[in-house]
Image 1 (cartoon, one colour):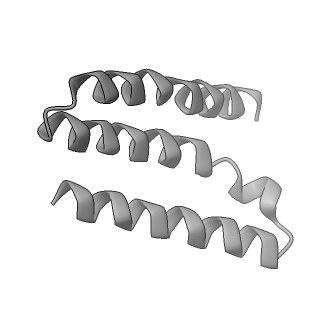
Image 2 (image 1 turned 135 degrees about the horizontal axis):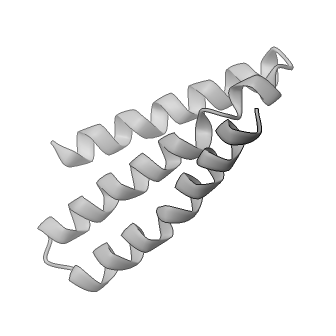
Length: 78
């Protein structure tokens, strides 16, 4: 179930990025990509935690904080 949710997030992120590039409105669409990437990395960390790879899970969770901070900065500046 977690893997399906992660794959769905990957598809959604790809669609948003493609729509932004095709319609040349990437500056509006780019605000949605960092929080979705952060959510995808948290889901990936949960998947690794279920596989008993605790070190990789913590590493992914820590790395997921960077896109989250970027998204907060984007929303505060706009």
